[in-house]
Image (tube, rainbow, N blue to C red; front, side):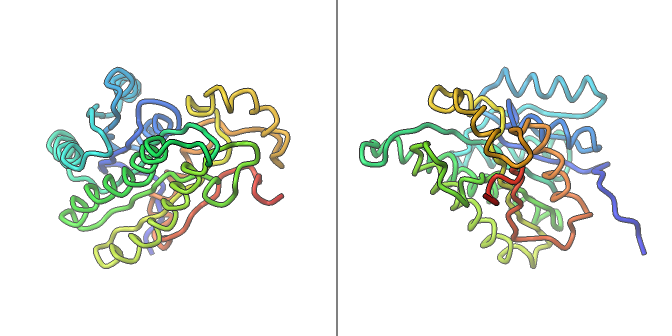
Length: 255
């Protein structure tokens, strides 16, 4: 029986939202584990910095500017990554936005933008990645959802964000069965409160200490707490896991 590995030597990964926060932590984690990483984001300087960090550690990376709401840009991003790094077989989709407004006052444009990035963007990213993986004989995708897919966050007026993240979880289940015959596993991972640029927005940053107190483990997450579980779901160690949502929330939703 072959030993199960957590490493990615010789594999190529694509990470959306790789310019900061959870996406950057995932890109760095996969690179440390041996993957060549295509870093995709809208912020050229930030993904350039992520790629430089990977190169400084002896890894291979490519920074690609692309909008996850634009299928043509995503197809071009995949093509560039495969041309420079090799066949794509791993992907983590972490690109997302957040903001807040009471549901009764939320402008349609605000609702639509969050749905477009946080849900449709995950679908379009997964679609572009899966097309490559089908050609390449299989792979694994992890989509970053949120514990907000499971709970309504007390005190946060973000019906659009919660709905989008719940959609990401169900999307993962749907894609998992559709793409299983192609050897592609699809899972989602739902972080709890995590220190990222999104949680530093004015309506949430001041409440982070309270969220930590409401978490059984007594603290909020750092991006580095989220990246290793993503790597696990992408690895051969999770080879019989597909269509699940892994909560990585310090126990927050058990209360």
